[in-house]
Length: 484
Image 1 (cartoon, rainbow, N blue to C red):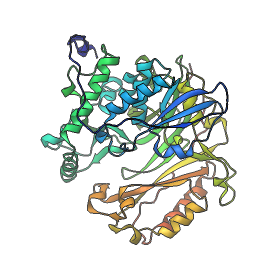
Image 2 (cartoon, rainbow, N blue to C red):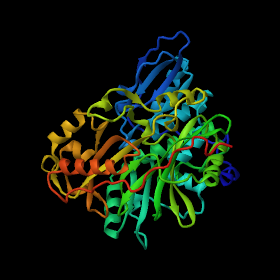
Image 3 (cartoon, rainbow, N blue to C red):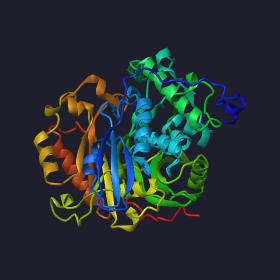
Image 4 (tube, helix red, strand yellow):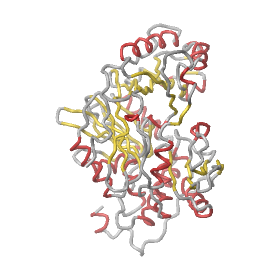
């Protein structure tokens, strides 16, 4: 940032830059009214499937700002600039008092609206340094070596493997590739070279435009052409873990939850909460102080790190809660179907209160201690999905309430696992989806037994799946572990 200021970026002498010519994408609003006379107006940006899980609340009018052309899997194809301009006008007209997004990219859009209208949420600059993993490292972990990457220029492979390639605006390992060989590098570059240059330029211009408008003295780059959308970074060995931290208005820090990211030969097989570690307080304080100085407030972060032999090393910071943003079911978990008895979109109330500058009322550590599991489902077998997975078992498993939901990946949706889907474990495994589950954390061994039984029944052939198993019981979460 200092170098950028020295070069004079963001001054009034610069001509405005218009993002590129993608199809226009105005907001498609839906209004969910409240019964309370003093209900506040809150806009929710691009909530997708979360919309159907949102329950009416007498204290809040929810304005759902959707757009059919947005896809989490292809964020660069979305004309975000026209959507943002439309959303700002909508929020002005309807006197919106708070704005938030459930996921990373929607939270970035919300931050632009917040900063433009002077609302209570985090600044655009601070959220940008979460969603852009390159600039995140540059500011928050500058000791980690990185290489800028331009896939369209057919870059030479690195001299050693494994390495990690990251794309801007990525989430849930969409836009992250762990590469183990020259062959896999070439395949990944070929995949990325299918990106459209006009779309890449439009996104660079979008970032430049809004930094120029909102943070002219803190611009990451002095020209739109110089924004980095892809980079290469080291692959860290060690246990990967995460902390959900709520940053409130006045440097107040509260821990919502912790989690372990379970891997098998470098492949993520499961996200599970709470985590099996003691929170590294000094290190976490350093990260949050830097973010707060950029204007990050009234929102949660998902701080992911590797426990290396030299201490914690940040993997990424997401401007949202982790998997905890999905639906929850609170019950005694004693019978089939009880998970369906009390649906609750976990953290909806927290997100709403945060964006209005109010304290968060609910934390998993204050409630019954349950374990949330996002179980990744892989296969090493290609061909029709119906020949790999027992679809009738899956349908029955979900209908009985054994899981919260099944989140399919493109191969499963398409009904066929083609050669291009084998992108995990050095090209050996294809991801079919995630199974979202709830369990008692104390039932550690029992949960593993249930997972084993689920996989055995879900797949038609032994040896064609990667079994997900938890490996250590979680620690009780102290909500005030990071409080000053």
